[in-house]
Length: 395
Image 1 (cartoon, one colour):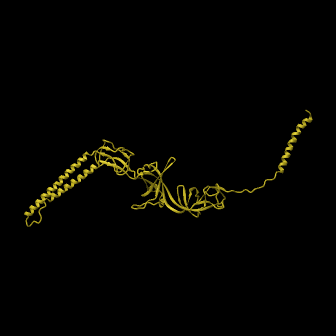
Image 2 (spheres, one colour):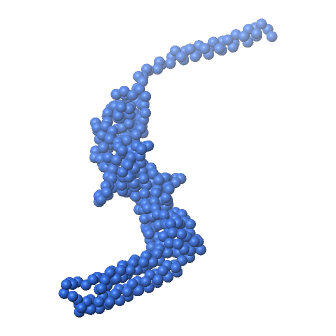
Image 3 (cartoon, helix red, strand yellow):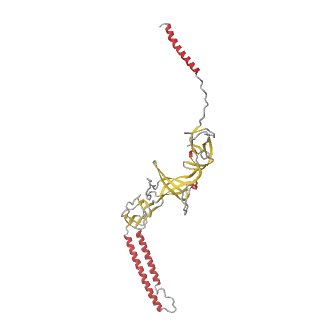
């Protein structure tokens, strides 16, 4: 290869590169300069809700354990062998008021009644005999009485004997009543609609008076004792003794898995004492027919079993012209953040009427329809620019 060709191979790439650089420089210099635009602050994105002043009912939340309204231990009053037991008489069984639960062999008590009847007949006959003797004795005394004797000696006219015979008759009557009562006590019946909590009864078992053989609980109603702070009592209607006023309604709730079961109850009384440890009042809520024995068309699929731990929501006093907001919308120093018509933040002081489980009831200078900010922001000051989420309207 000659010197000329070598020079061309070296110079030609240099010329191509230089032409490219020159063309790029011309393009850069000919490009129009970008226009400067002022940056606009769109405001912090926030979620808002609309404040609505209206009547609100105070809700008070508590918890408690379901207890029987009435529980009785069956204690025998007679001795004997159990010779009859109601079908299904076992723990967990239900019985109606007046149903036979079990019976003690009664033949001995039936014989005792017959003996008491015989003793009573003899006592009544003894009175008839003494009355006849007394009549004859008085007639004889009237015929033979002396002038200085106004009344005969009581022994002569059988007065002490008559009183003794009447006492014997009264004792015989009492013995007959006792024998009949013992006979009745051989048959144990349900004193009310009940659930058998426990039992120790079996055919052929010998029992003695004073032995406890079963525990039954009323199923007409159940009670839940709910401890509450003393400050909550002012919102509730607590019935007093001999007061016909109904107590505040309450809803008993039980969450099982993803299902929520509810029963309607009513505040029936205060236990009249404050717990020494918790310093809380004790209120009793009654629920009618917890085992669905009386309701023919009850659609509830779950019984309110004794011993169940439940939540109780009391429906307290109704307050006019208050606003209910989520608890997260309440800020420090009893304030809320609002968005004004110019989409600027405004800090508004409010009066807290009641803090509830998930909400707060407030009043004060908050206007009806005000947009309350739910979003938590940092460095908040009055007049801060805001931007509502979504379409910009309160929701």
